[in-house]
Length: 115
Length: 114
Image 1 (cartoon, chains in turn cyan, blue):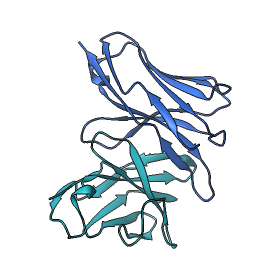
Image 2: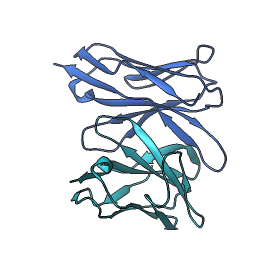
Image 3: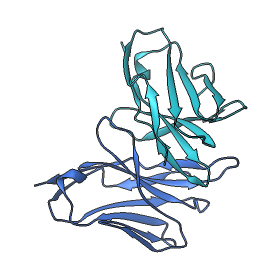
């Protein structure tokens, strides 16, 4: 597997502001993914981040709201822009490892509360 | 067609008992079925996974049973322990091109009572 860290681990933000979440992996990975998990709910894929190309967004998620960067094979960021209380959620990054591409490994998550 | 339906929503089991969580899918393009375990405040952790060419996979106290014709699969936790209390998610993976996309079930909150 891979060791995945996320920063910040939690944050409380004011509506209208933006927060950038970082995901760092200890080894080079093929794909990186960003998920949202609302309290007590399942995981919903926001977008897939491939190094060197633009992220692929799922239905209901747009780049203006959730811009993503993937500058190299071990790092990605997700920005939650112009936040509202409805954005309060857990944001998780996951990775695919070369040679085990069918499996995704998850980071610890970033717990966001928007007031 | 991309949904994965999971039941029950919550489950209470006595220590030493068997916990059973069921999932069903519709899309026959799914070709990989992992189960994740999530403790409060943590990210999901891969528990066990199966491919549709296998009917059963066992790892320690955890067993996946897979019924391809019925498009159903289930997780069995034998000799359930209080430390197994967590939320369990089934998932199904498909390859739309370039990456494997995971579709998650709604989750089952398991409580194992001592």
